[in-house]
Image 1 (tube, rainbow, N blue to C red):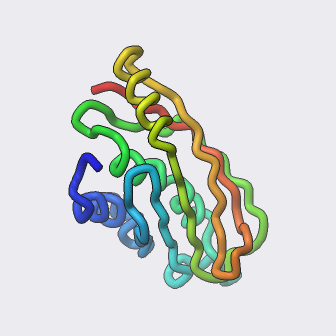
Image 2 (cartoon, rainbow, N blue to C red):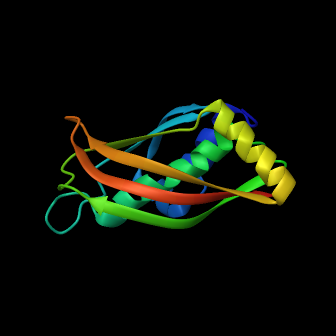
Length: 147
């Protein structure tokens, strides 16, 4: 990891005011693996399920958290180029998401970004409720850029 764990947790949970207000928590922050949880409390919509914007936030934030745990932030920075979210069922409780990148993929992306100035990668994630049901699926196109 290129940053101290507590700094990564603070950047993930508190750097963006909207995310901080949502109550999102990082449960796992390690190289190549993050797990985040969005509480239902405070994020309900008009019918009592989780607000679509909160679900979208939960789907998007893992890209940044994975960057912070896996890439050299002194030499690279991430951007999101595209994000799609497919809602499967109402989210009526806390929702979790896990994202992973294999070490070989991390190394290959850094090598490509070093040589070409940028490298695209895709994160396909499942947002899961407390019973293990998928409430939404996301596909994010990210880009690692050389500083």
